[in-house]
Structure formats: C-alpha cells, structure tokens
Length: 355
Image (cartoon, rainbow, N blue to C red; front, side, top):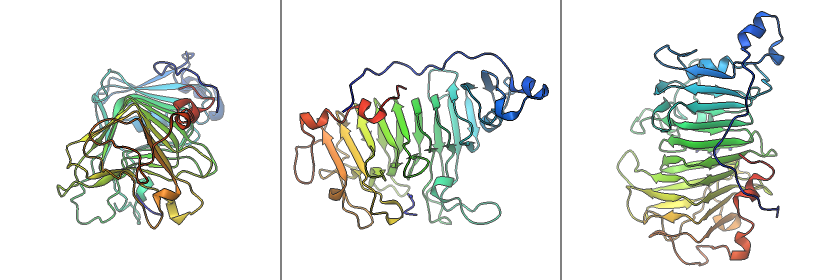
C-alpha cells in the first residue's frame, strides 16, 4: 500500500435481499422529460458479454443508473470474464451487483492496473486509483462474483506494484459470496474521509494476497471467509494480512469465524501491522482476529511495526483462535479476555445497520 492514506446484541439476518422495486425504466422517464435527479433506473439491468442483456460491460450498466437514484437497482451479471475497470460514483447509491449463478467464480471482473502504471495523459494511477472495481457510494451490495487484479508483479518496468482488486469508500457496504484476488493491496476497505464511518460487512468471501492485502480505515467485519496467503512473484513467502489505518475512536477490522491458510512457508506471514497513512500519528489502527483457524503460515509473533509506528501503541489482539498458527497469550501476542471479547462482536461493528 502507498504510505501517501455496548450496544444491545442482536441477531444478524440471513442472505442479502433487495427490497421490491417498481419496474419503471430510466429511459422512459428521461424520454418524458423527467429531471435526472428524480429519474429511476430499471429495477434490474442485465449485463451479458454475448449481447443477450441490456449491456455488454458492467460500467455501461452503472452509467445507466441515474444520479441520486432513490431506490435499489440490481445489476445482474451473466457468467463471463469482464476485463474492464468499474467505478460507482458517490452519487449512485443503492446498487446491488449480483452474479446470476451461485458460484463466485462464474463472473470475474478483472483488470491489471498497478500503482505505478502510467495513466493516459501523464502520471500514474496510485494505489487507490489502481482498483479494478471501485465503490464510492453508500448502500452497495455485491454477491456471487469475484474482483481480480491480475497485474504481473514480475513487471520490472513498474516499481510501485500495489494493485487493488476492490476498493470501497462508502458506508453500508455488504459483500456476500465474493472473491477478491490479487497480490499486494488486494482489498482496500476505506471510508469517504477520516472523520466518516465506512461500515463494511464481508461474508463467505475468498480474499487472496500476500502484502497488506486487507487494508484501509473502514470499520469492517470479515466473517465465515477464507483468507488465502500466496507467494510473491519471485516464489518467496513473506507478507502481512491486514494493514488497518483506523481513525481514533472508530472500529477497525474484525476477522471472525474465518480461516487463514495458503500454500506458503510456515511462519512466513504476519496477521497485520499498523498503517499510519501519510505518517498521521493521530490514527489508531485496529485489527482483531477471533474464533478463526490459523494455519502454520502465521508467525508466532503475528503483529509487527510499520514505517516507524509500533503495533503495541495501537489496537491488535486475538481471541480463541485455533490451528497450528495460533498461540498462547504473551506480551507479543495479546489475547482478549472473555469479558473484553463481549465488546468485540459483529453487532458492535455494525451498530444500527443490519446487512
């Protein structure tokens, strides 16, 4: 990544469901002269590479959603590989991006920009700009598909190799049965600004990478997911799972009921390190890993420092993890007590929001 960024308990609901919508097309409203701010898109927009849908690219479907759409719009994506970059701007909330099968592998949105990739017109994309898929709007849902950045780290012409598959910067982002695959900086879970909350709920996901591949300042829950460690382009095994840049007083990353594994060397990967984006000492990065299976790939001292900031000055802890990579409490491996763990539940992260 670039160094330049007790409330009552309640039961979470089941699968993500969009509210019923009236079948009114945006095109019909625009033809009638309705202002764009009040136009409604079709309840469902279909994307298919073979031309059997409304559009052949995902970005074209996003573009068809009117600005400031007042209700949910489903973009239904048929199986295929969509090589494109996609951006959902902040003025297009309530989008549901859904693959048409139950497998996250049947729909792939992929591109290969890296932080150091030259941009048309000059300059480079930077880490956040490298994202294959970027979500800046609130109330976004995605399920049954995968986001990939397949930038080749062996490319010696590019030195800044951070390459984001999925970037979120809104609030109430729900990702269910999705994949996020890359190497360095795969999944950027952010917020619109340091003073705003960006809640993200990730369920039943496959998240793959090697260096800081879950990072950002969002208040994010990752549950019932596989976090897969992969080797670097040169075949070496070394890296870090999480690099939170949490603002003080906010929740960071909660990894719970998940599995950290991968075909890498034993004791080669840290669970995380504190990212004080831009050298901001006011940040208070947080990652808690609990009730999760840790393979032998996890180091016996699972947290480490970053850019002169000590992890011990921030908020890193575990609770009742299992597997060959787990270990007892020590000064180098903080563990929550049972009473402390009661304040580190999913509901504490999501507040008044039920995905």
